[in-house]
Length: 151
Image (cartoon, rainbow, N blue to C red):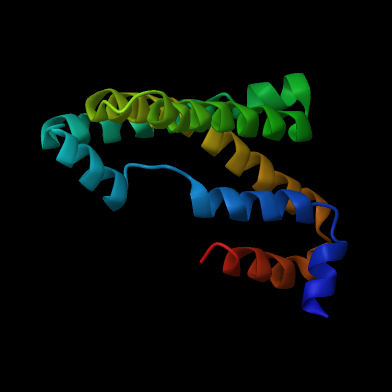
């Protein structure tokens, strides 16, 4: 019954998109850190890039309310997701176009830095859609399923 309630809610597609995004998002986590260290990026620069990524994510969250007023929640979420997808695609394409590991790492770093604004914009859109569209009596159940899909 819980799964059927999940699929019957108006925003299940957004929740599934969010779950896939959560599983595939690039970040300055351990795997990327190890990769860019093997290419020769210093720990100091990695730390600076992590800080810049946080600032970029903060900017994305900060302009969210402005974008919602201009475009609405659905379009804002779509724009944010498209923005992030384009940047991740640029990073992926760099690995196809050149075998120079330093160039690949630098394109990856810049793409991830800039994509954080889209990630946090989409995150806020998905959460707001869930809060506004799920009946209060089903929120715990549906949000529990959504959360378990990202665990």
